[in-house]
Amino acid sequence: MAKLKLSHIYKVYENGHKAVNDFSIDIADREFIVFVGPSGCGKSTTLRMIAGLETITAGDLFIGDTLVNDMEPKDRDIAMVFQSYALYPHMTVYENMAFGLRNRKMPEEEIKERVMKAAKILDIVDYLDRKPKQMSGGQRQRVALGRALVRDPKVFLLDEPLSNLDAKLRATMRSEITALHKSLNTTFIYVTHDQVEAMTMGTRIVVMKNGYVQQIDSPMNLYNYPYNKFVAGFIGTPQMNFFEVALMRTGDNTVVTFKNGDSITVPYEAVSKIDNSYLNAGKSVVFGIRPEHIELSRDGFGLKFVITNIEHLGNETIIYGKLGDQLGEFTMKDEGDGIIVKLVDNDEFEVGDVVNAMPKLNKLHFFDAETEITLIRNIPEYNTVTAEISGNRFKAFGSEAVMPPVIAAAAEGERSVDLVIPPQAIVRGGDFRLKVSRIEKTEGKNLAYLENGDRYLFAVVDDGVSAGEDYSFSLLYDKIGVRAEEKQLLAPLGDEVFLEGRFSKKEKRENGERVIHFFYDICGYSVEAAKEHGYKINSIDGDNCYTYTYRFAINRDKLRLVQDNGLNAVIVEKLDYGNVCFAKAKTDDGQEFLIKVDKDFNGQQVRVAFDSTDLSVYSTRIDMILC
Ligand code: ADP
Image 1 (tube, protein in one colour):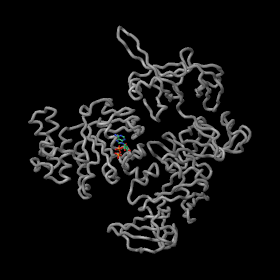
Image 2 (cartoon, protein in one colour):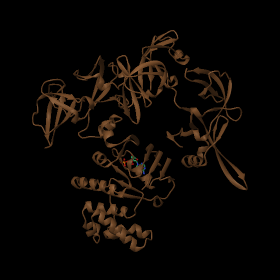
Image 3 (cartoon, helix red, strand yellow):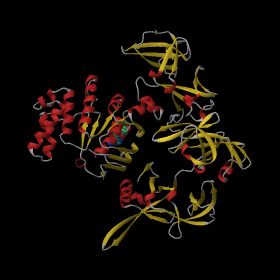
Image 4 (tube, helix red, strand yellow):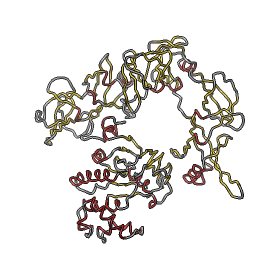
């Protein structure tokens, strides 16, 4: 029984290949976590780092509360089951299971007790005298599980344990392993490339691609709310249908136009979380719909297609088609006009029929064509709101307000701008006022749908705000962006300041002993680094670490103006955002950053201090968070 924590884990192999990037997850005790993704995405590498069979390039791995990065595999209290079973062919099943315990010099009596107990759980008592070659694949895999089981480990790691078994046996073993997990109450981490295994076994699933985590979620959330097109396509069979479309809002409706010119109309409500900027046919969008979320009719509304093939699977019918009403010439090439529909056992349709597909309106998926990220997030990333400008005032949300100086400067010369407002940058109290249409509980937060003209303004609100009330609010101007047409006039301020510098060490004699201290040096200002971070940077980059440049990300709220020991900088500009003021400071080596100051601040020269506990260190050599 154990919890695990992976914090910014990276693996760079000796040949320079980055197999795992910035992998972070908190795994609770007794979870069944599945790593899934196509071959080569970094699943096994991550599992092997947890096992201690592979070194961790950067990041922290905790089992329980212990940092185990440098701990030997045998001391980690984990057991690993491999695809290849890895049984000793000359030993009996009993000896195979007892082997590890004998190595640990466990008394024979206790070994026997443990082997018998595991053999009972796995139903292999009758085979204990056999050699592996006298057993079937499924039985051998149970022996391999048994060998892990007898160790009574804190964590079970399983690397594609079922991939050598035939389909039927795989299905049986799947439910046996799930049942085993329930009965053991131990943490399981399971690697597979098979999405069915992942969906049926995992309490949470980590979907990976090219060394990057794509989404960590429960099986149902992955299916219902895929974060991007890759996850959407990876989970579910047959795969989700994808079409390039343009979206056009017309009053209460939105028209979805396909590349062949056909279109379907869906109510605006079904796409209300999609940002305005995608709803005027200006940007290309990928529309996704699962085969099981399409209804077919011979006449009526929908997307016309010709049926090219039908598969009757007994309980369900899979219909393949080609958009349009003409079959045209046969081609294997996928031109994005293929469609797959899954119906419950149906013999109504025939190859050659022209039918209409109508997607279920609460099952629509849309993705940005370029980033492939979903356009319908539970909590929208931002709202785009047009503000009309006159003089130093702007009009938005049906009210007029004085523009804070920074916004006014950015918008100078424009008659209207788009404000890009994250839902978290809308805060209670202030001059703007909109009616709450409804409150949705999602991701542990309250998302308010505020009625802003003909669309919603999404805001994260406190408990106690309810539908029907007038919500008065103001904007955190430093967190919003300003755009005109496609041009960014002002970027939102992030929570971190980035500065470059060096890493150094000093040896001192303290009480007769030699003690090493590490430092981050930024333009003449030295901050002492935590010892473990110092050793970590040194072990990742070797002694070259004292010559490399590092990037330090410092929490902006933790920067302090001080009288003496601090980073020297001159103030080049003061930025008044209304809700908060910043000074733009320039270091002697020309780096600029913004620091929060009082409204009446008028200093010319500042010293800025911060602690090493408030910063993260990035490598500039290879894109990686070191600590
Ligand atoms: P998966 O388990 O998802 O199939 P792996 O974790 O085995 O993927 O591998 C991830 C990537 O790292 C792959 O591109 C693989 O070729 C590469 N890789 C694995 N082991 C090594 C190694 N020892 N040296 C260099 N590259 C490796």
